[in-house]
Length: 270
Image (tube, rainbow, N blue to C red):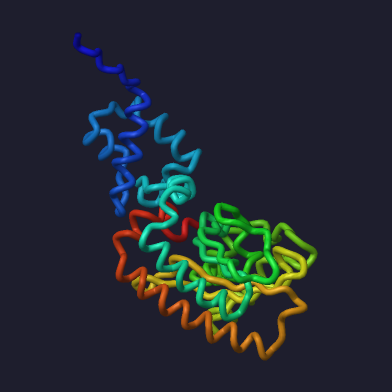
C-alpha cells in the first residue's frame, strides 16, 4: 500500500522559501527579484515580506529597496549553532581575556539604534552582569554601543535622535545628543568608548569597535564593577581589549563569508 504524501501548506512554504532565498544573499534581494525567482505574485509576496520584516526575520533597507536577512534569524538560529566555528573562535578570544581579568566581556552588533548582545563571556567572572545574549539596550547607553555609533557623523546622529533628548536608562545615562556627539568625537580620536553606570548602576565599561574592510561591524566591551575598577587595571583592560580586537578582526576576515551569512543583523542598521 502506497503511503500518501503529506500535503504542504502553500503560504507556509512561501514564507520559508523567502527566508531561505534572502538568507544566502549577502547583497540582499529586491521584491521584484524575489517574486521572479520564487514565482510568487507580488500581490501575494508583499504582505509576507511586510510580516517577516516586522518580526525581524528580514531587514528592509529603504534606500536600496532590498531585503536582507534579519536579526531574528541570528538570535534564534544562534541558539542551535552557538558552537559554530566562527563564534567559537570569537568566544575563545573572549575567554582568554575573561581568564586574565575575571571580568565579564560582551560581543555584539548594532541593530537599528540598539546594541544586540551576541556573546557574553563570564565563565571566570567574580561578579556577574545581568545582560545576556539576545538582549538589547540603546546604543548610546553602553560602552561598545557608543563605539558602534562612532561610525556616524554628528549630523547623522542628530537625525537618529531628532528630539535632541535621550531616554534615560539610569540616572547616569547621557541625556542629550550634543553630549553624545561630544563623546563620539573623543571615541574617534582615542579609539576607546566608555560607559560609567549609564546602562547598569554600579558598572563601568570600556568598549572597542570591530571592523571588517574598514567598516565597523561589531563591538567588544569589558564590564567591571566600580569597586574593582582603577587606573592601573584600566591600562590592563585596554591592552587586552586591543589584542582581542586584532584577533577577532583577523578571525572574521578569515571567515568573511560565514560572518556575512551568519550575522543576520548585517552590521549597522541605523
